Length: 194
Image (cartoon, rainbow, N blue to C red):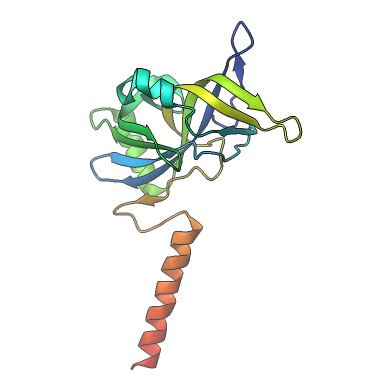
């Protein structure tokens, strides 16, 4: 869910539609990438957390081909296709391909490479959930996954592009720390062994 989007209730009031975040990794020149959606147990800005197994039934019924890749959750803006979507021990793992023949997909690819766009978000309908009365956190136990979007502002602030091949920058702190340590080590070696 983008941060400004609100929950929509079904006519029965029981089901909700919700958007959650996705972490993107390894964007390649051909527009293919992989990453994790809904890291299990992590609480988003809407106080929701996806539980392990929440998408199992939906994925069995729909498969990767039945989940749309959109831009900013806009159904009029499909920008690619999902090749793999599966749950693993960490979360919802995805592999997708931006459509080179679609102008918006080429724009999104360039914006991702330049770091101007780095959020991802999943759209789903809640099938079964429980809310902790004390914390107010809603645990999503079962959800019907229907789309994954590249967005500007995901519900989970940590859901950002982690690594883009052929780019010279990284957003995550761990990668920046490793790069800074390598630079410092090179500088020390150069000064020590002249």
